[in-house]
Image (tube, rainbow, N blue to C red; front, side, top):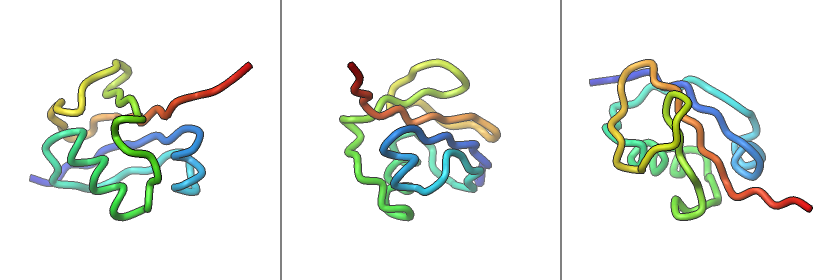
Length: 81
């Protein structure tokens, strides 16, 4: 079943994608499948082990199931000083 997911990208992933957010139509069941699909489509450079996912404002696991109209954020490591 197709779902529309709102995706936000930060830091390195925003640079890779060339934009900070988008709506994406997908039949992926999990956050992990969605990230793999986005990596293939957009050349996202960070491995999942380097990224923390959040769904609808809460940190989650890669196995979390997606629902239509979910908001997914992929948060890469951030350095600062």
